[in-house]
Length: 321
Image (cartoon, rainbow, N blue to C red; front, side, top):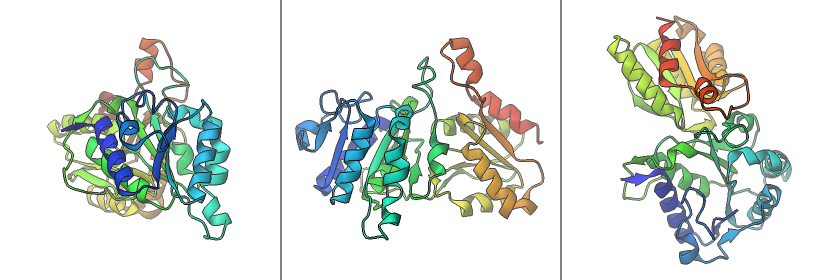
């Protein structure tokens, strides 16, 4: 049993031990061990040449990581909060995402951006966002987003070993979550969704922290006699279309839930895939559950109204039965 934070720490430790080219850089990770404890102890074991505290400059952090990856290293860059990725968007979508293509495949870009995202209590509009859909839209990036400690470790190890740039979203509310993590060496494959629970009446797809809300909603639906097939995407780019379409072919109904704003979200892409490639499977309209189109409020009552909840997922799905 490990927390999500401990699982990612194990992944970093194992990969830095396995490959001396792996190093980590970011704000307060050597001095403080990261604000969620996800780098605690690494400076003592690997030294401050491989666990590097940086200035408060996301542009410098990502720019240095891009340069290091081009020089043959395998950097892991910590963004502190995912919201701050807006500061260094040019380095992300014009440099790290495109260099392999623009250099005609002569150079690889083996780097990971770790990005803590998502709602925690009263972190307000600039420290609570789920921005994964921005990066799903950028060719050249892989985007992973685990929901539990086992996948957190397996996906981080896979991301570090990948020769492509990977953005690794880790929900802040999950860092303290405990779960079983295999003791043996393992990798969670990037681009492969997981069928968490099989069912025959509805396919319910989610990822990250909302997976746990979806599971609660599925449990309530089961009591109403609705058999739910629950799918954890784990990776949103590339999307595992095969698992999604096979499930919808079986259940004939689809719902997608995520914490991010509904408009332009990952749910819209999944809905489009099914509409284009599996429309004949459907016996009811596709349901999307996401946050309203507004900045995240600070006030507790407004924040609660903004949140996606298991009850909101349940009520939205009940409308198609």
